[in-house]
Image 1 (cartoon, rainbow, N blue to C red):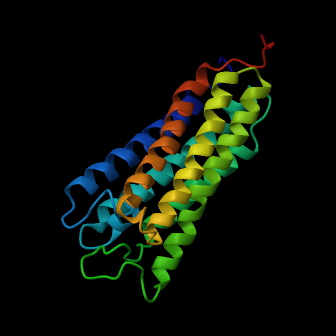
Image 2 (cartoon, rainbow, N blue to C red; image 1 turned 60 degrees about the horizontal axis):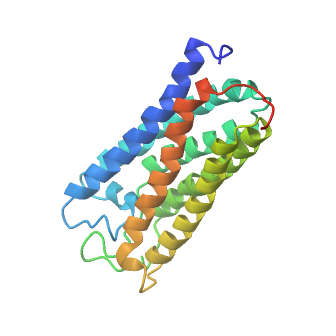
Length: 223
């Protein structure tokens, strides 16, 4: 796509770097954290405790990279005849990640050890963490739908289907993981796994979009 300048390509690259960095770090941190089960506990619980700064930095750095990606997304999508709402939605994901990094989550599902399955009293930082996390799980699938619509309009049907499918899978995974963290007996033991699969699907789409978008062509005839 000749219309994308080198600086805009670099901004798009930030999306791929941020998405991969985020997933790799929370997978590694979750695998080695003592008394922590990646099958049961949410990613946000990694921000609790003495080593919680690692996940906090992961949230913040990823959020900044996603914001840079959002800035590069608008001129890239303009080549396809649109591009207003998707960058806004992706930007909200970045802001949500940054905010989640500054406010640690409340204990849940028995982590750290000795805490109840559900917090008896919510803390201010825990409430703020959840509020900032909300756009990560809502604006991202919305962005998938917006991008999918734009790509369908310009003849990129395979990518459009991938984008819409990502939104559907992401929302289902988010709902199931939320039920697990709400202590649904059947889902609590795998709440962390469900959330991780959901995040891998969503951030995998972000990385793929960041890598593929510079190669997309403008509107073309269907067929």
